[in-house]
Length: 167
Image 1 (tube, rainbow, N blue to C red):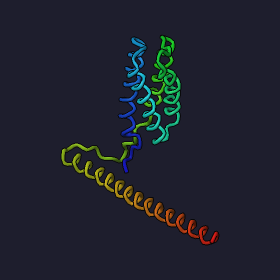
Image 2: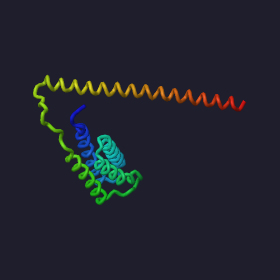
Image 3: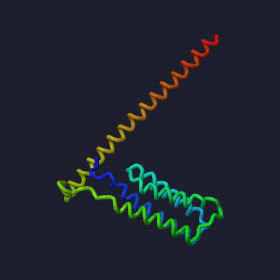
Image 4: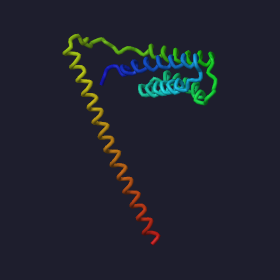
């Protein structure tokens, strides 16, 4: 597994925070844009979920607050004034500050990848990790199907037993 559990989150969070900022500014300019509301809610929800996955509750809470602030805007004609934009942008800034404060992974004792060959080898390792994860997910899916079949069989037996008891 990667030594940096936030490696991909940092990238995704930056993109989502930029999208949130753009959506807030677009809505401030034209509050009637319903597509802007949908984009804002989608980005906030995605940020909240991603933050929860990597166990960063402060960022998830800010994203949830963004959702709560924007949710009433789904109703046509709901007001989105300068104050709402200011509050939303403040939440985006706070989430960005929390994201910026995520510690970088330790570099002590790790070699820096300098050659293309080393970078390609590192990528293959990560691909192997992904393959292992996908294989594990496939096994989990197979197990879930077996459990579902067993539950169906148990239900059928229970119905049969009930029918016999009534007879």
